[in-house]
Length: 197
Ligand code: SF4
Ligand code: SF4
View 1 (spheres, rainbow, N blue to C red):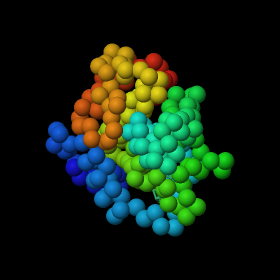
View 2: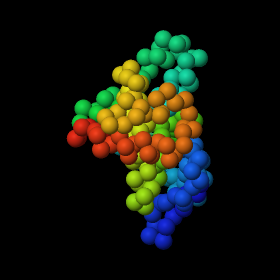
View 3: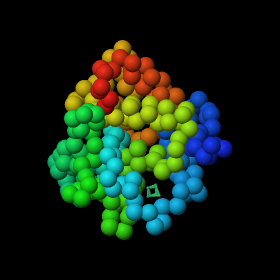
């Protein structure tokens, strides 16, 4: 999978093999981002002031990271402490610090949980996305957010007019992109108006 810049200055992905995974896309994004965006000297506006939504793989990885230091019980309570449910979008967002910055953003601009950061942080670049890539990211975000909402609510992931979300219980971003996008596109139309997990 290759991420590239179109002549119009938009980020796009080349059509990939049917078995391409989300992890493959994330790896390609990391390579592309290093050459396309210079974060040195930036005030890290993407991590300070913007709402950051969580996904189920992120939350599971964060709990696993914290468990050796804080113990199983406290790690289990972590999602409720670091997330908040936005009443308008019905999305689980990272609870910011008192200054509106991501609580995992260090004073020197480093991400303190870089290895387990959420999907949206991994796919974010402050460059416009080509329409097809924007749609693909929306599908991935929808499916991973829905999986988190189901897991936190103890539901089985069955969506209106769609099969169960294949991401329920995922421990890594190793799902096949085509499967995730197909599920999201089947599930989305049956979703109640105004509700987007
Ligand atoms: S990706 Fe974030 S840190 Fe990097 S230049 Fe853009 S806003 Fe700044
Ligand atoms: S988790 Fe890390 S990359 Fe994501 S917004 Fe917070 S500091 Fe930035």
